[in-house]
Image 1 (tube, one colour):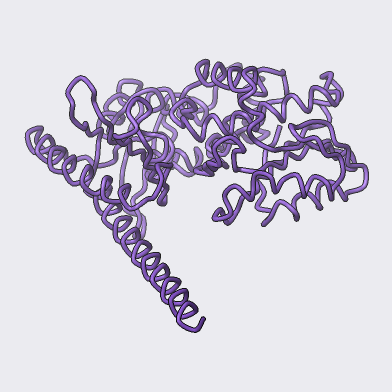
Image 2: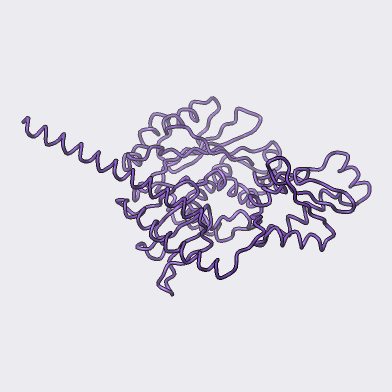
Amino acid sequence: MISKVIDSGSIENATRYVLKKEHSILIGGSMLSKTYQALNQEFHISIDLNPDIEKPCYHFALSYSKTDLEMNELDNDTLAEIATRHFAGMVVSSRNPELLHKKDKEHPEFNKKVDEFIESGEIDQYQFFIALHADTHHCHTHTVASRISVKDSKCINMWYDQNRSQLICRELEQTYGIEKLESSWEVGKRSLTRRQYEKQVETGKQPVQTKLQNLIGNLASNQYITLDELTEQLEKYGVDVRIGHYGNKKGISYKLDGISMSGSQLGKNYTYSGLQTHFGVCVETKLEPLDKILNNQSTYLKQAEALANKIWSREDIARTLTYQKYQLRANSADNDKLELFKRDRKILSWDESKQAYQAYGITQKDIKSLEIWNAHSIQKYQEQEQSGETQEQKRRSLDIER
């Protein structure tokens, strides 16, 4: 199963593309209309509630393999159900991204929230339709939706939607028994060559490549670990780790059973940079004293709290704010307090028991990003103020002329 988040520009463009295609069949959704023209008009019920949203359209494509169609009973009703759960998952994960952490193998709480979202009828506050395209050898569905709720005119956040869409597909594959496809972070693992595979079948022994991939993955995936700690643990399994400079970049190699392999030979996830970006390994080998770390966190906490509140205070209404990989939103328990996320990890939150904000691994780089965000926020606010003054001047000028 393959998912794709499509930038169609406008709902009119997406609707035209999906429904004007030959062999296009409308199979589900929350809307009453059945034709291209009528659906476009109906979409304006939600779009007109929040005209400031530049991109109100959400467009997803879900593709299925021949194996899925031949081995599974994927009739139109089932395909519509899968697409509906995918859209519901996108809404739920936009509100609570921590429910869909990519390192977790199962997400029971996420699936429970999706069930509640659909069964309670809350999904009906969003306008969407689902169409089937059966014109190619790979069957696929399209979901076209308005990101604006007809209930409160709030907009679905598109934050990291490509990654969230892939994770939701992995959940749907398990639920419906659909053919599993590797996600983007699994592709960084190099496959065996045909000769390696044949030798493995013949001897019954794993190649060094597979042994190293499994060892590194098991040690690095399920815990916070530094590169020094990973190296020490690998040595217990007989793996010699060497780090060196290759041109302007740092590189890493592994030696097991007398065979040496570079990180890139194992796959991009096992390179020096890949260990950090994929597995979250801390490659900084020189650790600061604990008292210095605690003092820094205390300083960063005060700075982050002040900057977050300044950014939030310039908004007219409470809503989710996004800047690059950071997300700022109201606390779920107390709307007067804030929560700050970095990707799907919470780094600042209000602690009710302590009646104070708590920091969770904020760095100097985070503070720098918040300062830049704050500067952009000030500039945007000033531009809005000037625009408002200009409009007021025009109105006064017209009044004088009259």
